Image 1 (cartoon, rainbow, N blue to C red):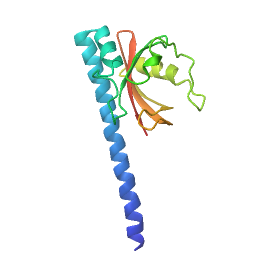
Image 2 (image 1 turned 90 degrees about the horizontal axis):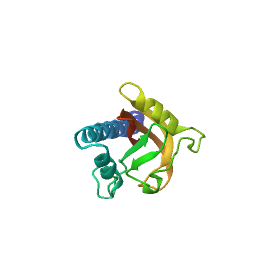
Image 3 (image 1 turned 90 degrees about the vertical axis):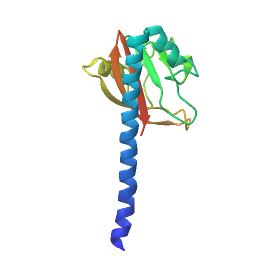
Image 4 (image 1 turned 45 degrees about the horizontal axis):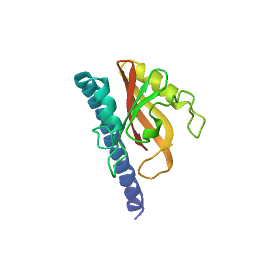
Length: 150
């Protein structure tokens, strides 16, 4: 009986871990897709496809994946959620724990091959502040990213 008590939580934990890895792969693939789109169609097309509600890189109903694009000084150029942030410089914005997450996003994005940044941010599905990790990468003087909620 004790082994059943241990197995079920282990299976639930393993399933959650696999789902998180799947979401991370989707987020990273979306960033790669957005960068390829920018290289083929140009900067303005990427920004339009991210900012428009029906755009390819805008959050879809029932989902929480979307692209965000910042210039290297911290100004939001495009975001697939919270469109009111477009044009706003967010260099000094902190998450609820006091982390200057955008500064880290920009630094990480400019590193060779980009990378992952952890912080807290509003989830479009739940409307609550949640732990998030974002994959970011630089292209043509911008940092493009997509995150998952943990």
